[in-house]
Length: 436
Image (tube, rainbow, N blue to C red; front, side, top):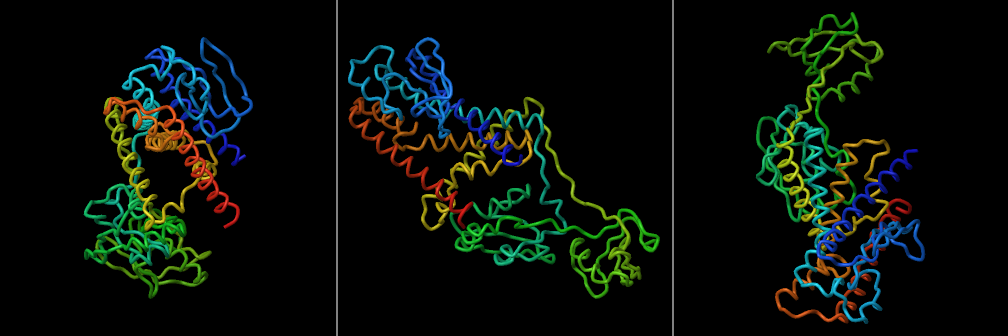
């Protein structure tokens, strides 16, 4: 059932994204009275799952879930239908229209995906707001995993800044560690002093490749009494903070819990902070516990938005995600970052969806993938929207139309590049999920 829910979410998301993208091309083509021969979700190589015709356009869904297409009359696209290009141009064909109209048709899909992301983020801001734990509320610092310790972090460190910028939302800390083209400069507060750490790019790459970012940090919880559950712990008071047990001190609540299990049935000497005073209390253990309920000191902050406030907030979120993804894309083409090794295909994309249905999470991921689709499609690669647009833009500048033979050749080259990228990305999936 878990896998089925993931698959349903993946296909629903993909259908929305491709449908909106191709709808952009379709709407803009119809605005300029350009004939659209086919409008398909997924590819219909050999046959389609269903189809129907309305006016001059055939609508349908193909069986190969690798995208979709809008076949515009008089245009060399992924269908590679060159026979129509041998006929004289008709006034309702793409090639018969001015360059500026063709350019707008080409970029309309990308624009629609960006607008979809903006719309979704606006809806998320208005419906759920922004929920996060603020770094300023983490007064007891963080615990780090082995990868964090190798980078020089100590348990109890508090983040002050990353590359000179203060940190607020703790969810962005790990992203700052793994999305970088060079060394990172991190300032932490350690034992009341500010310590500057330089995180070398090579070590960050190694951490990312070994997935050391998973559970990279966790919040340190103080051992603060919220209520008393055993009579044997009656000497304690609500609000007491246990800062030491026997000869051990400086740990957080989970570590003290683990320590206590080794003394089950014995009494332990607690060092307790109460109203600024340090007390020592002897308390017996039952089932490896003192017999208190502890406080959870971290409160989720929620930034609520009115409808009108959610509009600029949604636009800002879209801009941040585009900027972040563009930074990652630049890193992929830089051999020193080795980020190309982490490219993923359909399995990787499908795996980001949770095994339980959560509408907020679903829309967050749909908005993110919509931006990925927009950015990837605007790249100047023949076969993608950006490739078509760049030729048309060249025509607008030079007033000289690129020959159809050049466009056809470029389309073949682009399709080969896209196929190679698909094979590489999905090959990575197979290696990571089934072989490695």
